[in-house]
Length: 634
Ligand code: ARG
Image (cartoon, rainbow, N blue to C red; front, side):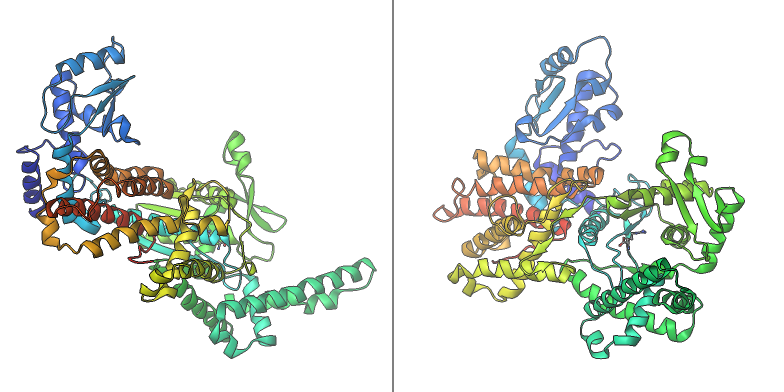
């Protein structure tokens, strides 16, 4: 195949005619795998250990001073000698290699350093050739990663999932950012990804919303800004609802007969309206559908700003009543659920022993009036997704506040006899955002935050008049920078950590922020514009001129990128990518003084520009993976 021919040509540059292939060795997409394969061959000669044990034991390093690859000696499972003794023996026997230096030992580890010239000549052309694809590995998502014809595995990522007529709060924002990232990660890893938005769009509260619409709804306001108008209606009717409840409570206390009041109260009207919706009465359904459709149109616009597109807008409303009745039957037959005062509940402590069972608590799945609940809908939705998509894996990106809910969900499905399905499901959780407010007060909607952060960035941009004058559409750039600020702050820590929403910190150019990353990218673009070399110039560069320590270290950083992505598939943490991008960008920015372009002679210019251009490619690929839009000027 073309890939294989290209690889042969690339290997020739390293002075190799071929390399051994091992499971999960993908030299076409990950240049470091070539080195790992080579090290495996040599280590096998030296130790006699089975290559199947050696190859996977060769790991990447987190910092360059530890080498470009390390091997934990105990991983080769040789008994009777201490790791450092073995290491010393092997180092003494280690043959000369065109690719790597003799290993060094550090405690129980062997460190391998790649020879700089070979790496440079090998890596930069690969990055130039693979471009946007560099870092992706389409094999990961194959049914059999080592068989290209085995077909893609199916991944469902459910994320964002806001509630219509209610605020799009920090939890939804984080779910959107993390879910968007995970979808891109798996997509790049060759999975067939379906992105589902599971809207909160069903329940008595939507009956209440309909009542509010009848009372105060304005067609024009709905058309102009459905999300805000519906929210305002919802707030207003909830105030009335609360007031009414108080009145009724007081009367009750005073011993008055409230039967009549209860029969006509808003709560009861809402219940009846919702009943009309569940019964499929055309008028009720049509109104609800309009609210839903108009809201989705708006959501889509906001998601587009974040580079996110959903394949499916599902939602609580989409779970068919008969399916829920079916599930209820199974649960009852299997003795999982039980009657409790006319309601149906699951007492998990009866099905799961010990602490684990207790910690799952009890969950109601049918109220006394027969209505289904959040969990009931999730159960049937999950089973339906399984038959509809035949997924291999499904991720729910939901706040850790719902840890219990998702545990109950997965356990219930398991207790229904679908252990296999439950095993394919995973909850990706995350902590809280504290104090999310902007200059204009506490926020309720994502659009408000994004607008406010963009305004802040716009003010900053205006401070540099000359640069500002060169930007074609400053408002659009400010918007992108604002979004980058919010997203990078969100992805900086581990997902599970809470963080404080800090407008000043996130929009700063100092420190590891979104604007810093954007600036690093824009600066690389600006050098490229100034030097004006063509692609042919860069392709014909003499890369062996890149000998300075700064150049070599930067190349070593760039070589790590595909491994960083592989590692991210294990951690599923955006911060794994972000940490790398910051380290790499710092390496770039400390190179500028050392590896000058302006004033250097042409051949050196070409080689250095090829290096900077590769750094830009990797930075841009990483930013896009996180869902950021790299800017060319700012
Ligand atoms: N709409 C829910 C909320 O805002 C989140 C939905 C999470 N997904 C699920 N399958 N339950 O809290």
